[in-house]
Image (cartoon, rainbow, N blue to C red; front, top):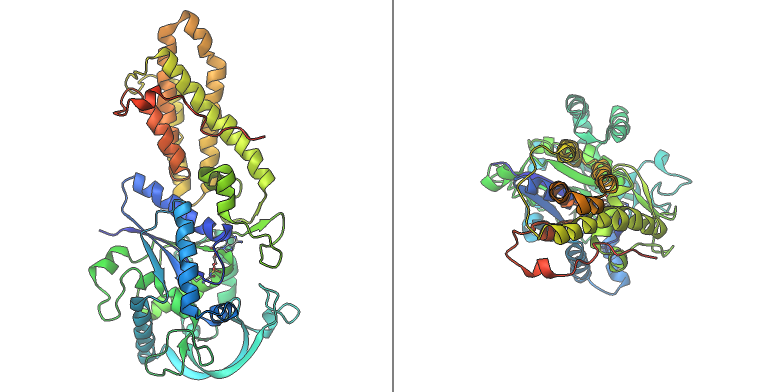
Length: 491
Ligand code: MSP
């Protein structure tokens, strides 16, 4: 049985994890939790990218070997994923022995097939991007992404025959319009490939911190060529046994989630590498936008890097998980501000969901003696809310997380309005049977909401379910506990 396979990029170990890394990884977590809740078998892989000149330099600056340095930063990543309740299945490091071995074998296989050949490279390199540039791509003579000085390199190298795959790539984009998402980002890639592809350098002789080329150990494998292969090596790809069961149960990948700045690597180079290996292509590469902070790019020198742990400490994990997916459509750029976060916390969580939940549960306790009748049959409100589920699920599966949350919060406000309109506290005085029916409907609607928010806010969902299992809980203490607000209001 093929599992649903989701990946994040492998993060460089030259920084501690920040909100940008958390964003992609949380998106993968949300998708996984949703699919699992629907009974699908999912495999979610993340990890770290540890080779290359940049990490070699960072480690040296800290008087560490690259491996020592990587080992330390890897712990930071793993701790962060624990704090954010990221439910990944496999954490791959590009320094893992199995990965390194397979990268070497892939390289040899492609030398043999003629897809990799030896030559000389003269050109421009940005070590922060770990990317080669054409003179025409530079901005004021500097790297277009990092605005830093670039390096000139002139060395013997192995080239990958990217140019040979131009037509096949264009064909694939055309025949699989879902492959590159969102579509507004795909056009840029298609135009780039149409302009003509050049062969790319995939080995370095000057960089020592990398996987050495088996048949020519003076060369190390180019860090991107090495890192991209994680998507198959982590899934059990074996050059000598590509049809093994594990790999067949995972590949092709269902979605590579990435940031927009690395779309080209994933949309052009990676599919060409897979074509050269005779492997099917991933079903989708989804490039999301970038977070800035108060309008500025996050950077060490500006000192404006947002550490998710600080946000979680102040507002709770689920607030963070909610906020970064609610406001900004996944795909577009967003600006992070704590003022906005606080506003949304009070309006959507404390007043919206929190208020709906506590009003309902308190009335149930007061008027229903904690006993819930069965699922309502002829309830207008329950039918109306149930009908929204299909679109919510569709949005999550298409990575339209903000649209899914919009719909869920539309349901929350419909339900809050229902309470305001029906005035159950007045019903309590004259129509106790009507009141009980109404509260039963509300509980069942809230159970739906608890399921819908689960991928985004797993803790809140669990807490809601605990109280909404009214009358059915084995743990009777829950029913006697005072109900604390889900989201206490912040001043
Ligand atoms: N190591 C490469 C990826 C290799 S994948 C085979 C790399 N690493 S990275 O550490 O720079 O991480 C890049 C990824 O982190 C982005 O693609 C994105 O997923 C996430 N983000 C890093 N900063 C970000 C923002 N400011 N905003 C949103 N996401 C960003 O590139």
